[in-house]
Image (cartoon, rainbow, N blue to C red; front, top):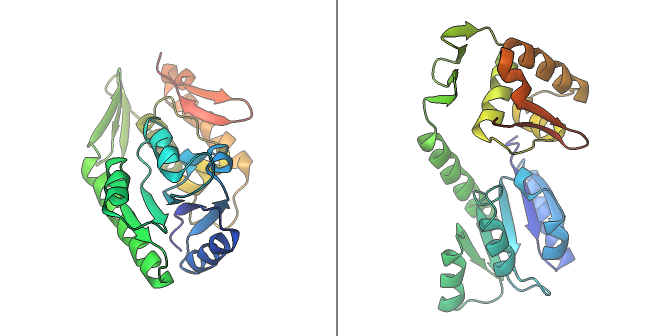
Length: 229
C-alpha cells in the first residue's frame, strides 16, 4: 500500500466515485469533494496530491489553486488539473499556477493512474533532494543522516518514533499536525495504533529534549506543533 492521501475535487459526483474506486484499488487513500467551497473547508495540508477539476461553481479549479499556492501550509502540495477544456491558454494558465500535470476529459483511468504515480514519484524525489542533513533550532540539532539528536552538544536518547515525530514537527515549524496526521505519517505501516500512543510519545519526547520540550505545543482539539520562541 502506498499510504499517499489524495483529494479529488470535481462537481461530477459519478466521476469522483469512479476515480475514488480505481485509485483506492491502487493503494491510495482517497477523499472527494464536489466543489472548491467544500474542499477548502477540509484540511488540505494533510493530502499528498490534489486532483482538481477546472470548471466548477463560483470558485473554479484555477481560483482554488491560486488560493492554495498563496498559503505556505498548502503551497507545496502537487496539483493535477482535470478539465474538459483543452486549449493552449488554459493549459498555460494551469502550469503558471503551479500545476504539476494537466489531464483533459475524456481520459482513460490507466492514464490518470500513470500520471498520479509519476507526479508523486517526482515530488518524493524532489523532497529527498531538498532535505538537509541537519535541522537546527538554537542549540537543538537533529542529524537526519546519523539519526541523532543533540542539545548543547549532548546526545538525547530518542526512540525511532520519537525521532520521527521531532523531525516532522521541526521540519514544519508552526504547522499543526492532528493525531491522525501523525499516525498516518509515523505509524503508516502499523495495523492498529491508539491516539493515546501519540500523547505518550509526545510526553516522553518533551522530557528528553529538556528546555525545548515547551516548544512542542498542544493545540486543544487540533493537535501538536513545534512553535519557535
